[in-house]
Image (cartoon, rainbow over the protein chains, first blue to last red):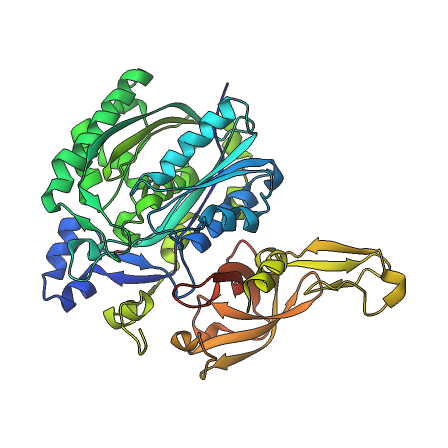
Length: 350
Length: 137
């Protein structure tokens, strides 16, 4: 059975803070950091935004582009590491806000930065087994980096939603597989505000090992090589890592560029690969092939071999804002406003 | 607001579900159980209707002294919005500069956090509005 993406939608909050501005506070070399990370600025959620509101905005953008009846969505999965509640699902808020209740399976997922792609795989299984007609998978985050921590320069907010189904598929998922090990490179304990990480340990044994292993498995399973693809999207905790892993695997900067959004909005964690994939679907043509590998600390990678179909020409892509439109719609703020927006200032009574 | 009251209002707060009189066609928001024009004639004829969430600013005010829970957001704009479907409602205008809030400006509904009971309490979500993206204009 053919199965894949029926529609997609992304959302990025409006406010930004530059790497240079954050570096100014901590007396670091802003230009050097910005260049080294290949990140200019990162998005900040508004006072009234969280993973639930970002998920709803992205999902509504996906729905407005297609003719799917929300009542036909039989599963709703929200992948995030910043669900608004510790106990109470984000998925129920999303399902209610798009009209997919009450006959739907709903659950929140968490797998660091790859919970969104894990949701896509789960929806594929349910669609292919015939249990549901459509599934909605969302990857969204309002990630937190501790002040002065290297992650503070990139931890941002955003997300994207994918309707997975077997009819009117705009991008067929030919193959998906995962590479998973127990690798504690990044974590956040219950009740803790900020995550912790293993510093350089997050590189070679974590990000690079999982992505390259997953990518090689996917090449073998799909019988493909880098030159078979027009686009390649890798998890983008910063702009340097995906460029390096892409080069190692044999992809060119031209294949990576359309889906590399992190330099302008930072690392949207569970939203990172989904937003990159949305940016590629904004411009992709029928017959083009997309290579996708996400990465979630802890650790694992989900790989997808995708072919864009003729159906994409029938999708009302212009009915919702493109990723580029959201990237361009921005307002920069200084560190003081950023600290206020992210609740980093301790108020009276707290 | 109590949790049950918020829960009862979820359809209108999340999805702008209003009511339409089956007798005279008047659309109301928030939804009514009886049409204010047709009164008894409308009994049993009131239908739920999902409003488009698109409209125009009729008037607005800039809030500089906010009620409890909204202090951190000042200054912000509250506007009377005439929806394309008919009803007029009051909502916060977000994600723009205050100078951009003008009478006649096209706006569209967005889904946002409205309030929270406390740091450990329930979060209330609902509609706010933003200046319409090009797709809506």
